[in-house]
Length: 439
Image 1 (cartoon, rainbow, N blue to C red):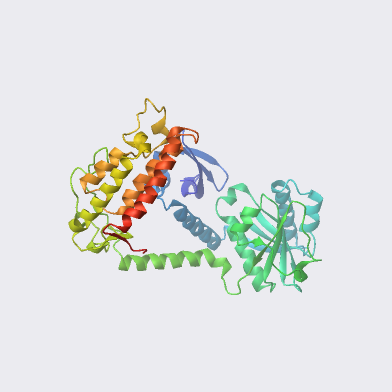
Image 2 (image 1 turned 135 degrees about the vertical axis):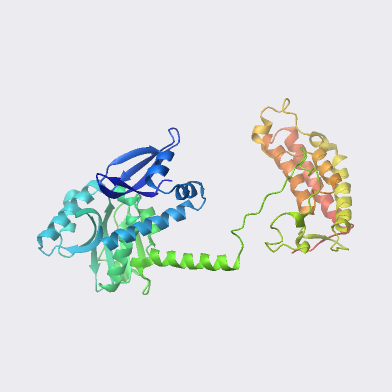
């Protein structure tokens, strides 16, 4: 739920809020409103007073929540920009009183958000006539911004400072701020690249905005900007046609169009009932289940020829699954007997006794042994492909090496028996009715 936008009538005015966190212990959500008032509520209060219940539950339970929240964030920002509550303005030191006030506010914001940068340096660059700034203005207050210097002859912009108030960052304003700068720098200044020297705290943000380590030829930037100690020189190449200011909206419309097309040609929204599947401790089904009887399988495009797809085929493969199962069962039964009779097989003939191996089932979540494998073979229902049989045998050896240390007899038995199994499998395959198709 963190990141969910909600609205509420507060002091006679409808204001926007954002769910910024959830406390698992108290099962309560924290909400920060536009006027910076905070509120802590439980889920029922959130549903009853702040948003439609079905939407809350969908977002609360959906694995697609991050994407939905991103779309919600962009829609809210779009509406705030259209209503004039949120503005992105480009300002320089032109002597206009209002502009100077905003530049001072931006300078103060940088000083608070970038405590490691000397304040004198911030003042000098923000108020420098060769530098420009883009600011986020909410309710006539500066809540974020970027100060940059355009080098028009070299066709790049150097970003000096970038900072946003914490409660604005979670609303998605950082990406939108950078997109506005990209659009303006390309269209108005005619540049092709944005450059910056990012410290470790800022690298992740710039990477998300399309920046990477600089590859621009040195002749373009050397002597104009310099890399700082502890910083990474990064670049973002501007695409000549991307509508950066409306990029998120465009992607949202494209995604919506694709989803609508998928719904036209797909029945993926249909939910079929499950099956009553019971199995024993060995994993063998209590009763046979035909794949064609599984609800929705045929509707999804399944055909009988896909049953038991394997790289190993019987020499007389046919559509009859019973005929195909017989040589497979014979082969697995013969191979298992050779393993069972080997001198190193004694630790694997029965399931591990937890009394003799403390904590075994806490470490090994998928135990396997020769007795269980034998039951699965004899059921003639479990191993419908040779790969399934091979996976169980290899898991048995891997479990032994996971639980036991290399110097133990169990570890050594597992290694020797697995080597024996590999040799016997290859040699037995040559004289059986099983063929390796290499597909």
